[in-house]
Image (tube, rainbow, N blue to C red; front, side, top):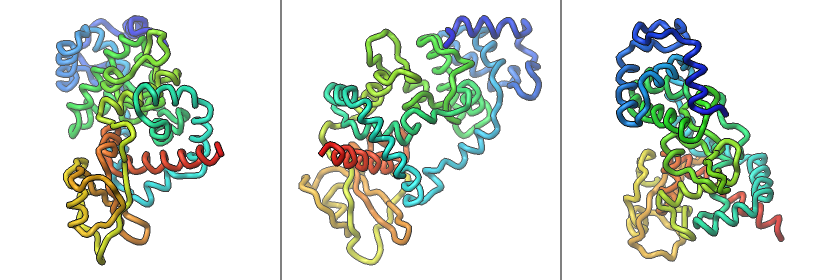
Length: 337
């Protein structure tokens, strides 16, 4: 990709000198005179050390994407029941291609697992859920997606404004062309779908070439996913999730939005759940509603489960990653016999 400086130079050639009138590009461009845009530029310049004129020239090339607002309001992990959400990810094709990816990158996965303590099946499962092993990484320009959410999505404008600033700084740090980089409707990038701030903080140079490339370099991608897990508390060899049976006619009332370890194994038993575990009764856990197609269900997550939710703050997402990881492990183990 072109460098940040080259991209700025190209943008400058296409723009008038002033940036205060908000008339760049008509309706398919952001009004640079808007208060939200000016406030963003002032804050990004102060927080990230970027020149205001450079920021205005970049934003003048950003295009609003109304479809992104619609997508933000209906994420699948929040509107689908668990059984329906699960079947979208636990497909024969996704499992088969995950096993093939594992076999192809076995040496890399084993090396990273040894270095960072994250089991290969969870690294591969993250890539499978996020981008079908790097094949579907998003078609929106990251610049457009983040600008749309920063300026036209008030519920999370502050968060996405910070991500937009991080992306523009990242473009300079990693020589990423800010006009060419593509990702999800939320601005996540590359095979592991890191947001810009996560890219800057958790991505690592896995092959020692001096760059952190999450778009095309598998050494960097695999090492970065493992590093993200470890930095968010992953415990090597510790359990992730177990099944529970409900003793009685109805499961306990559970909050599907809870992401905290606010129960223990003892309190789970006291709430009418039975399960198999040799861990101490005071082990912190999270009780997870897991709706079946014909009946409710409950699962029990441990600290490693909540680490997965730090990748995407949804228990359904984390369950899908876990279940895919287990299916991949079973498949690879069987194939190796």
